[in-house]
Image 1 (cartoon, helix red, strand yellow):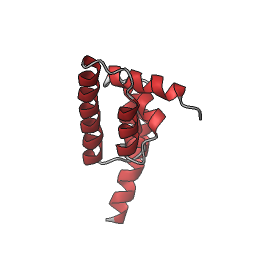
Image 2 (image 1 turned 45 degrees about the vertical axis):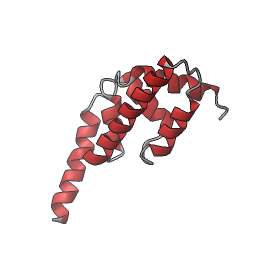
Image 3 (image 1 turned 90 degrees about the vertical axis):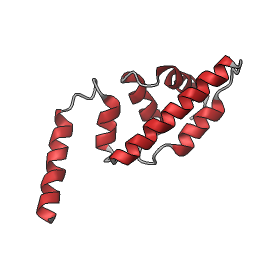
Length: 111
């Protein structure tokens, strides 16, 4: 069993090297951080929920979306770095309006 796990781990690392990070950066990040299917589904569900909230709040005239970013940062899987995840989702064209807003907000926060 240990040999099989070691082999699968090795093959995963080889496949990760073969994946073009520029085409699917979020998926590349997911594999690199070794997230499970359930963890990825939770992240996508979080993004869908926050994207819907963003659109709803925007339609209601809200102009400050910092609470949504804080929610995202607080609920994001600990293995996923916030800025890298936002960039990867943007580059992969996922949840674009929300991620653009998060990117803009993060640029205003002193590091």
